[in-house]
Image 1: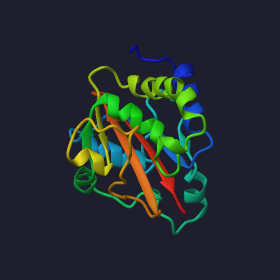
Image 2 (image 1 turned 90 degrees about the horizontal axis):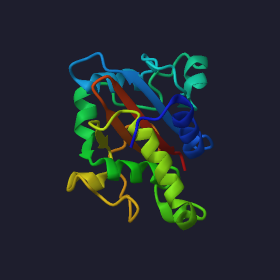
Image 3 (image 1 turned 60 degrees about the vertical axis):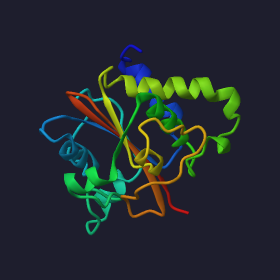
Image 4 (image 1 turned 30 degrees about the vertical axis):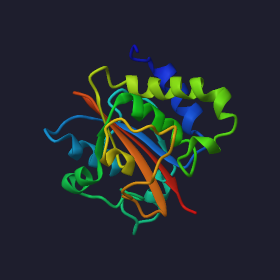
Length: 189
């Protein structure tokens, strides 16, 4: 899949996550250890190098509440701790996971009209990932990825390593030579 342009990528991000409690942001690769770049994105210390859209429901709350960490709701503060929570997955599984993240319980069977919308949702997810190039690496906190790098997230997502203050969260990190993408979904119920 070719790398999308700004309009295509932003439209895909909005179709998938505009009405969801999610954190979608990209930052530059500036450290040898890409996990430090992911932490910078989570801390809101990095700007998208292309100036493309970010979705961040908590950004205003972080700045208006001085006792709240700039990383809220994320609680992982070191590259090593983050790395211990992440497991590498294939691009195919990563795209499925992005679709699953559109549901607050991370399951496609809860997505309205999923069978009719599956191909379009998957196309949008693949557009998001393709921004990072054909040689990108994908990592998730999903427990399913502990035993295989190609879990079927359309079958089930069995939770994962929580790294936020919320009841449940699940995320995907996409790493290229020049950028890191952070895609996270939260459940507060």
